[in-house]
Image (cartoon, rainbow, N blue to C red):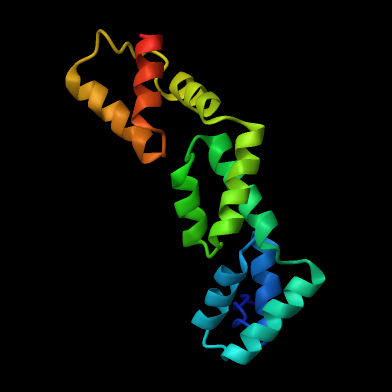
Length: 160
């Protein structure tokens, strides 16, 4: 007779919960605190866990923001203001977000990201031969990722 494994319930120890969460991916301090608070852990225990994680170097908002900004730019998912909004949504303060964006821009410019994205997603697109509807669709797609309209139009007309 075989025994079925039953899933253990999550431990009530916030330190163990935090380590399990951090083992999967990196979090900002605010994100991790929010996740622990969602598990009905008292605020003083959450604060103690966050402080311990900071002391041990498991949490670092600057590192998290820089990695996230680089990742978003590298994948072509966001640039500029869109990255700042994303970082703020993840609990990163304005100064840290601006610094992370600048670091990401030092490695790769918005223009380079736009070139790569156009080549990868719209390699056969011809601006001059396309319909107005197709143009709008592509322009809006790129604007949602944070590219400025002037840059988009410049690249598309240059390419087409």
